[in-house]
Amino acid sequence: MKRHILCRPGFILMLIMVLTLCSCDNGTDVSAAGASVSQQSVSEDGSVSEDSVAVTPTAKPTATPTPSVSKDAAVSTDNALSADAAVSTDAAVSTDAAVSADKATPTPLPTPDPAMITAFDPVTMYVTAQVNVRKGPGTEYEKTGLLNPGETVSATGKYGDKWIRVEYKGETRYVSAQFLSSQPPATPTPAPAQPPAQDGQPTPTPAPIAPPPQVVAPAGVLMIGDSRCVQMRDVTGGGGVSWICENSKGYEWFVSTALGQADAIIGRGTKVVICLGVNDTDNAYSYAPLINQKAAEWAGRGAKTYFVSVNPVSDNPYTNMDNVNSFNTAMVNNLAGVKYIDTCSYLINNGYGMVDGLHYDAPTNALIFNLIIGNL
Image (cartoon, rainbow, N blue to C red; front, side, top):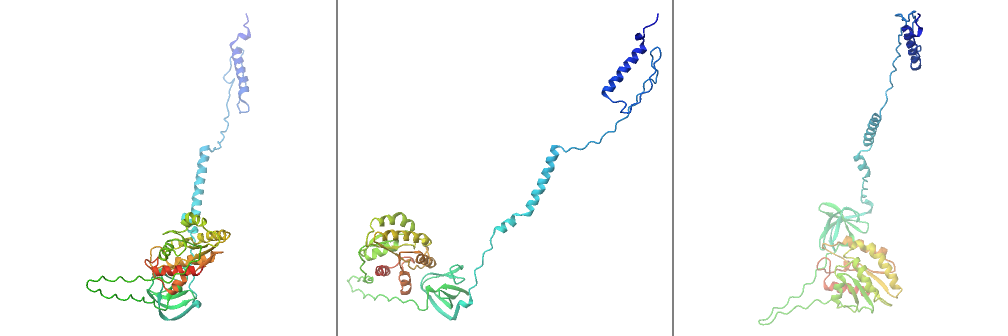
């Protein structure tokens, strides 16, 4: 009896190989890969010869991978570049260079013009009020010393009409001509000696020095001021004048207190006299516009306003003649609609007596009062 072909083992093996080859076609292109398949031979009994299948795979060349830059690597590179840039920027502008650029080179003061100097043989000059010694002929030059009333200095020339060239401690210096005089100060006449007391008799009391004759003040005069006004009021017994004055006062008091009191009593015919500034000579540019404003307001009521110069000072811890001069000059140049009474120049030219470098003795206070009243 013949065996059925499907039952033969060789046929079954060949069928398995065919299915395997079909499976390879779907997954891998064997021919394209260069695989070599030999002729299959199947014996009648279904056995496969040794060379029925010989597959030699051809290796595909391995591609060289392209290196990728990771995110971390990119950041690291950027950081490196950023650091280099920062270093470069810092190197371009150093801290010292920036500071140096900000510092402005001070403009040197000009050398005094020789053409402005009138030289003369050394002559002794007398100091009439406390004044600064300076390196050049102007208040912008550095102070190098201080002269007090009664001192002398050797003058060698004049710069313009406002400064005297002097020899001071072996150096050429300049002093304001306003406070030097070629005439020695007057020697005060000593009081007559009192006769000796007789036994059993009391020693006579010397008579007080009488102030100069007082000018009678016009009706309606109002004086506003500081301690110098207080002293004039006390020496003159009021002098028939209304007073608004307190010791050690200045601009702030003038604004907060004095103006309110003055506004309450100023009317037609009032003569308002302001004597302030010695306690705050740096406030000239505050005083002037405010006084101008009030003078215009008071003029609308029929009143007139006056301003009295700050008078000379000598050795004291609060101010000096440079400050006084600057204040007076600023007031003269900035007051409008206000009459300026220059008692300062009068005292410098005619003499005065002081008790502490800032305040005056009784005769001088009476003299100043008379000068003011005489200019109203």
